Image (tube, rainbow, N blue to C red; front, side, top):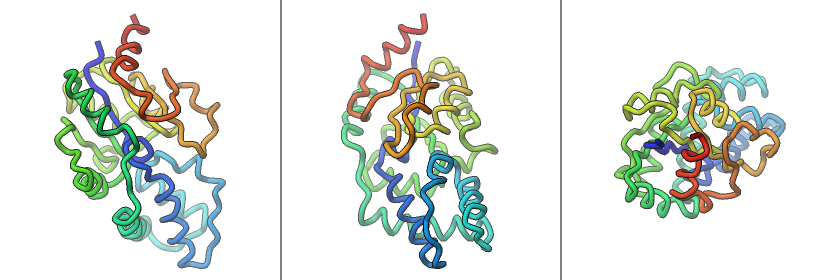
Length: 220
């Protein structure tokens, strides 16, 4: 029986992936480096250390990982204040899940201070029984660590969880954790890479309690 629904944040709850990309463009422009979109598929869903390392190696940046993380987050939060919006249908889905007795959790590769900024900005904290950042686990997505950690915090087993993800790395992490996964693919990523997901939908507004319950029925 499905007891918990776990949300990724970036690209699922908030339309942040274009803002992350804009952040990287600004960071690189400061160094007179042209942004190369070819590595986008690799970076989406990675934790901060892994994504900063990829940025550093791809563009040959001399700064330390810590310096790059700090600069990226500083740029990002300034953009968030002006541009960030929740994904349409998010509040309705959270209310629907809570009203039907599901545990709700958030598992994001973003730093905890970014997560808290987002949740406070849209008054969402009360919906979540567990909030986990990629900073809290040893390995980031596509490893299953963050989702297994969330299940442990919720005191449920992995097969009692459904994950909502938008990235290839995130889907892989959820499936490796032994959870079911609903994918809402980032439009800049190839759709054929999401075959591991149990269900693929176009937008968050297509996800509801009936769809989640149907995943439970399909596994019996």
